[in-house]
Amino acid sequence: MSRPFVPFRFQVSLTGSNLPDGLGPAPLCGGGFSEATGLEATMTPRSIREGGRNFGQVQRAGPTAFGTVTLKRGVTSPFDLWTWFNLVTNREAYGRRLNGRIDVYADTAIALTWKLVNVLPVKFKAPDLSATATQVAIEEVQLVFEQLTMEPA
Image 1 (cartoon, rainbow, N blue to C red):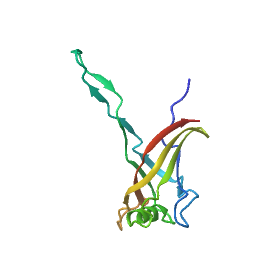
Image 2: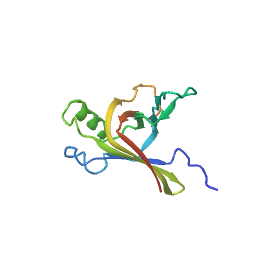
Image 3: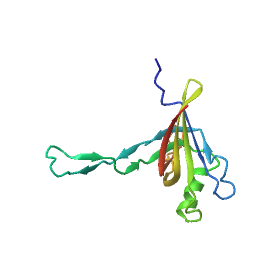
Image 4: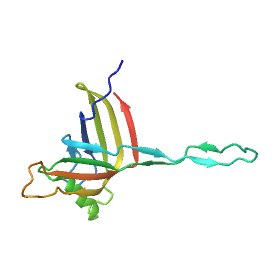
């Protein structure tokens, strides 16, 4: 009997070969994320009404849409996520997309890998600042992508 995976044992990496000097091809960022949410795919079925079929419609597979992945981590130096977002939004690196990989661990080995193709940052959120705060400053980036695959180890 296999045990379920625990959701806190994962590692994220974003890589690309077409980034400006200092941002590629090594992983733009690796590990160190406290949260990764939004890994989802939704297929919208197409309904077809056939003549003479009076009891229901035929359902066919339709287009697939992917969710927006949100990554959260403590702010560190270098500011690689902000740099990538800034390059894309200021059109200095408009078409510079990365590929993402999220490895989920069971014990000490990788149990499965989620792969994201043609990742593009769409939102960057800086940490809330407060003189009375005692928690770690958390930055957040939201990513869209064109393809999601899952590979068992």
